Image 1 (tube, rainbow, N blue to C red):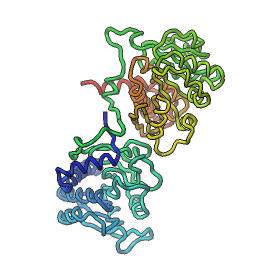
Image 2: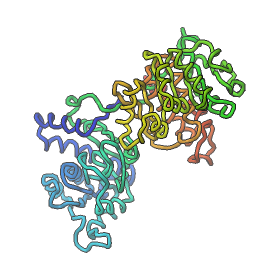
Image 3: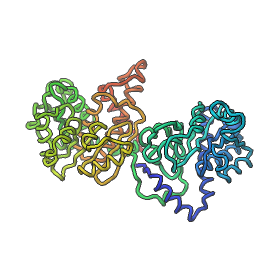
Image 4: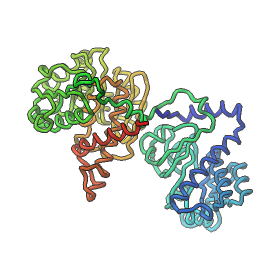
Length: 505
């Protein structure tokens, strides 16, 4: 499991590191890593290193210093380097001197012969002839989008960008992008991932994130956020062993769909089947439709005669009227783990008495999208999705899976998992029903609710990506076209195999 730390946590750890290791030595260590990854990008993009040209976009402070030192190291590899200084009078003095000693050049961003955008001729030329650009404009203390001169320089870049620590213009804490910002191909960050690398638009702007240990690992506290690795998802995903039977593998009840919305029942039940549940019991008005599509599902017409289960997945398509409320009430009174989605969340928001029916010892998972979250919390979802999910998880003593390109999974004790899909393929009708079925199956098999949500979100995103880019359900002509939930569901077994294979020795 990867950790994610806030800028304040990283800065505090660095200060403790500087007490035993001189700061300049740490900076050079970080800069060398930036130069090494830039060399790799150069080789991949141009086929060579020596004789190529790298342009540094350099702001004030240590972030710019890292870029300047990286330029000095690149010069030793035979790379031409020009630093474009956005604030020449505030450039990191030691880094600038090192670059010049190594034979690199430095020019002001707004130097002689400016063009109509105010960019000096030398700076414009440096950007135009670059094979790779290093973004050292701002660091972790910055807030807000790029200022006009920096934004104009970045706009002109049409080669790969390697960002130092974070893409400039991205909010370090929330990952928000509210104006011009760097869209990096690679981000080289130090000590550990920061929230901007995994949250919101910042995740997409960060590209491939490379974490460099500069010596702070022993100084870091508990992470602010966690990321699951494919191998640990694969190792934790329940699969039948030699002594298992259909009951020990987990029996999940699915209460979803209606005569009007039978598709929700088919998708949620199918996801539970594909997730390797030992048995799936469907209960609801769409029993005949579910049986036709999934004959292995034991289907009945009502939750009152569903039979024994070990967890419930409830909500998609049940409606928000009296019948839907009765279904949710029955499920809550069972005292079993429950994954509540869609109409169940609306019912919770509209009727406070439903909370009283819940067994306080039974795990509850809530899986809202932004609109449902607003109804549940009583406030619109802002940019700080992590804090919002944490607050609601604590208020309702439930695991909250907040849907989005970046899925947030908050536990009542404040722990947060993040899953960044970097695409919007799951943003299609019915995909949430698939996620509900996956979570329900994992809960029935005994997986801890917080991890069950993390596992399911990751596999769900993988399945969506497979369906869009090469799963057997797609033809070459369809690659990149919007996908339906059925295509996503069909790719779930392939996604599960992928994480299982990652767990192999």
